[in-house]
Length: 181
Image (cartoon, rainbow, N blue to C red):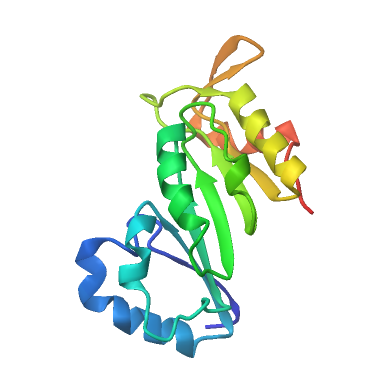
């Protein structure tokens, strides 16, 4: 494998209890392949300290951990844990974003915030104002921001748009609101 980024457990969770049996072997491979970046999302950031290897110390340089949130209650619980963890590369993903969320007090040491909506016919509505609010928090804190995809049901300027799944990323890109430092 050439140098690059390996996306781990994007349809699961690296910290899920069922992975306890094989996670140590995975950590060994991650450490061995320092030429690669390993990126994983987790809903279970509260299990982090139970799941890291003994030699973790302040983190591995080649590991990026993304904590997922979707609403304020969830953000306050998970990000209050995440902010104090010894991780060299941190990001926050809110996809789907289900309500207006204030993450301003958690943005120190965050490299990227990714926001998006749900993508199926039964998806909950994404309000574009919520997206802009998080973007503004990131700009104020000088944190990279990416609007990854609109939701299938998007409210913008008070109007509900029902979008095709195939168009969600394209529409988010057309919004042209990503922020890169």
